[in-house]
Image 1: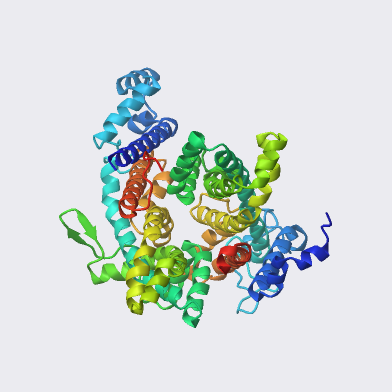
Image 2 (image 1 turned 30 degrees about the vertical axis):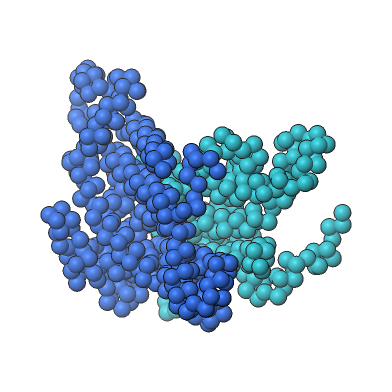
Length: 326
Length: 305
């Protein structure tokens, strides 16, 4: 077990190093930090002196090492546009994105589990067929279109819900601004969270359904029937529990996918989160902010995947841990 | 070997096809879309790529049937006075082309890597599959957004528009290779234990020939199934990228860029600029997905157990 954890952790570190190297190369290529600092009016001589002083003439690896050292201390450079440390800017925007992900996850769990189980237990019921058809439709509508349709219907035509922004927020634990706890905030997050959930929800319904149908066919479930266990016990205890394993792995990957889709959702709803900020940073060629975003998002991806792998290794007794003979 | 119509007619796939209304309707709609987008230069009433062919004075006419419509424009015009029907026809072509070319690139990379990985196994295999895992964990859309965004910031908007098509195909093509590689690898692992592979080995064929001529054809049906899904996914990804302004420029729009362009106008009531291309995009993806679902049911014997 220890060897498995160690290897998994080692892999995470290597991936982060690769991401940091890529991000650093981007920083190196994109824009000129000196011009952002002093403008165009300074003579070539002073520029050269400044370059020396800032270490911009050092060898590539020396500069990378410095970048890495600073990054480990939480210094990812200063945003050109906001004139503040890039990491601070991102941490300001992070709660908005996390709110969105939490709300979307809520919808997904609320609907996918009961619908998926029902469709697996009663595959020929009209509701199961409807759910499956709707899920194909859901997969086929890109997330930004769901968002646009929702805006058009509920904000433009009916005028019931706001179409942009976060609304009122409450500060929790002195740092966390959340819109999940005010009525106004909730009315703002409703449409964005539904559109974000709309891509993942159908996948989950189909996944839970197909996994559970497979489990229901297995020998031990037949044995459970033969033993005369009650239906509910077989469905919810024996079958559903074993359905959860693959759902955990896929679920972990979906968190990463959701982060990607937040960029689209936040753009449509002008939701002031990380994704919206990233696109603005791209338009302004705000290199330190772009780089900081890459590092933070890379970290989120690597951490969630590592955690999911480890949980899977712990929960699944049949998994062959790496390093052990099969 | 007689590869005739007769043979096709007796195959279980064909039998299932003519007995499945959803598959037939999807195939009909999809081939129509394909056909009209290929023929777009001939059947489109106007040339949407020609800046001189449209007039800003014609902008924002609604489709025929609504009040204030203009007879010349069946589906209305966009904010620049371009005929919606023509732009949609051309845009559908671009979207489909990107989907197909990106998938071909994925298939080419993924199949080669998967074959080698599955056949030679051991260290190389675990290394390649590790890379595939990592690559997949970052999700194509994220990778594509970041690469294209950085590329756009680096070369500037004007030069970016010239290379957009190529870049999108490359990025989506390269980012999704693990999908094919994993499938092919799993098939190869199952196939190489079979007797026919032993037989060709005994004959003394070279590994590459065994791989490409004998094992690869037997992995064909799962590849066909994921290919349909991959084309649909590539089209969705491209639409998302274009919607973010990282895809096709508005002068040569795909369906995604048309939707992005129209989004600014839905608040003022010009719904058709967004909703008509959106409808085509959804129908396009939906029919491909429905066909993919049907194919999976037909080609995957696991369902019938």
